[in-house]
Image (tube, rainbow, N blue to C red; front, side, top):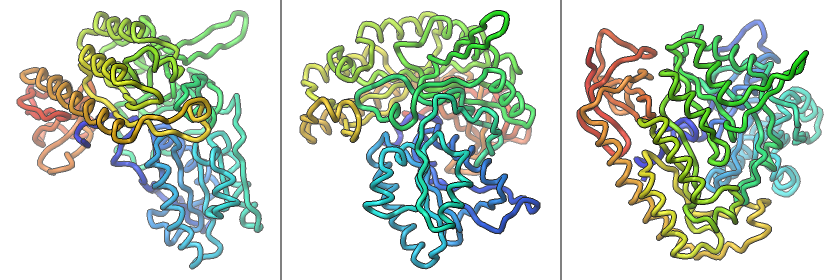
Length: 474
């Protein structure tokens, strides 16, 4: 099933639990070592870069070995149950390390921190500090409190905080791809999701600060940026003066695309209720905005979508798919699907299957419904679908997606794809890998005339369900 995971940077399974390392600056070194481990989506890894910037300014040196650390932070995700369990298991390991080093500071950052602060601090006594996504500037003070023998908590959510003035340290970067947060929080209240409660209300960054960050990345050799937000299509920033000027997501995409034709632009995640034709026409207008949209459907049935509080129905979603196909004919589309949501019937599940047949997605994230404490669904609906039924439905859509992933990949055979080289393939240093405009991973032989960070044209000769394989052509 791993081969079916979306080859996208929104939730890279290979990075789960990744520890960051930064180059030490002797002039600022305070003698203390920092270990940060990240889980979850791209927003969490982006936040870890912000945390690293804040603490590097205070002289912390990073380490990839938590056993020699003075401060351990684990940046968490509350969206997926397995991520939460992995975090708990890691905290227990860190607790053992604390026995050997009583002065060790252990903290939880991010989404799970806000939701489980009392459990972590008081009941299970696993951590010393709990910090929510809007309180990272307060970390130096919170560490000082722990040094003074206190427990420290700051999970206050802000309606203003965007960290727009902090230049993130790029963690474990290949120097080619970078995440750029354009907004924080979420105003959608999907009944299965905890994000509005853990990341707060939606607020957008000043577009000029976003463009400046992207231009700086390009000047430093980066060749691809992914604009991040829980719902990028609702990006909106107004400046006041003699007249009010409002920048929407289509405007922002154009501003970033105009930095340089060699700067590739991606974004994640879109919401079916908000994605506009203006955004689609902007993508089509600029060759360096990738022809790839992640458009989560979650369910193909209108009643279930209503229970999920997705604020669109089956017909609306199909309308958006038709618009994408019409305006950007060569656009790849990926999605998220949840099987076995509360009260879902067999016929309603079939509507999801038929949606997959209609769209023929390139890639998909697929999950069984897992009730998350604190969500609207947990409060309102019974999690009443038997586990074996959820699994059966999941197995069916995974098989369906495997069919369409292979179908989409096979359709690229014989075509020439423009690929940004990211580095060696995972299996061989004789092959390079990179992504196509449609976000498919492409493998091709290493050559003397090209290297990572450059674009090449690759003739596709064969494929798997998630990978294109070919050779470089002029």
